[in-house]
Length: 404
Image (cartoon, rainbow, N blue to C red; front, side):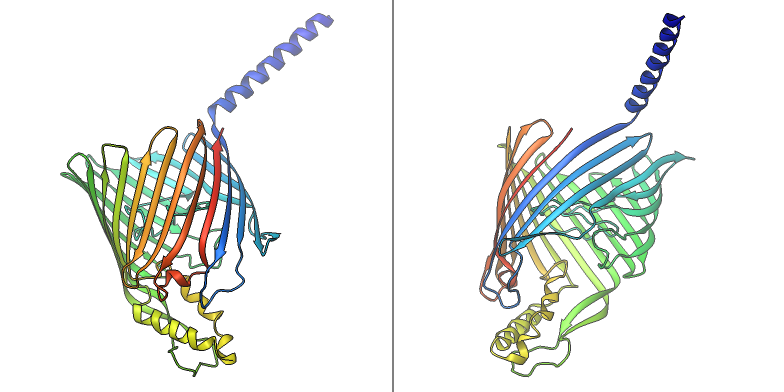
């Protein structure tokens, strides 16, 4: 009798374990980790003083997929320091990057939930990232968040059409401009050209009309361009000049402007020795003009010698928060791919005021799906360049990341 009961119990236990294992195998899941350390050296500038000189981050990522469902959740802890006094950051520590369902019906593909979506073709700047934002030039850990959306997409033999409604609100930048809107995208392969057109209306920029084109030239080179027109946009301006007469209120104005225009063009060339090169130029008409920047610097010089003017310097830091500080921008990206080391170098140039940001990094894959990265970034150029007025002159960074 006892033996019979034990046999039944063993059978049930085995069945439960088998069902559990089959259930787990039905899900594709992954655990990951990311750690970064960034140390900054202050520059000699007009507007930033006593800035933080260290940022440390640890992130644990959990991703799971099952039958069209995907969820990406990150747990993050941050530490900042000023003069080596470390303090934890009181930001969101549990961040939902993605949480969506992909499904199909009636020859259409549907998406419901929070998803990362990137229609851009640029590397240094991405005008067509209207819904979600990603950065290719970050030094520390970045948790990219998707947007809450409902979309429907249908494919043809040579293209696709997408209808979408989205809310770009994120956990990490709750105070930033986060538009809600709807629109459509049309993609078509015409000969050797990948073409797309985007029409999107949101509650911040009104109507947005953009497009891109990508083609391959020969065996080693590709060419890309993208452009975006926005019906309206928010622009910062100031009422300062190089005099000792300063406004008594906030010197920075936030104006609603019309006809914002962005344009990017570039080439990607692959050499036979595992070296890849990207060269890009982009224009952002929403950015401050060279004359506005020089007037701001003249005012900053005068404010340093005035008790009345010193109080305005902190307010003027807002001028350095634009997506593109300069209207005209150039980027050179070089990468060398080998085993197990990769080397990358980026040089972003502001040709109007001769400012530059240089970044070099070496990436070492020490095990499958595990790699470390070390590099530095320097802000240089003429004394009157915008990049020389940023809070830091030099940065070293270290990252380690992996997945199981």
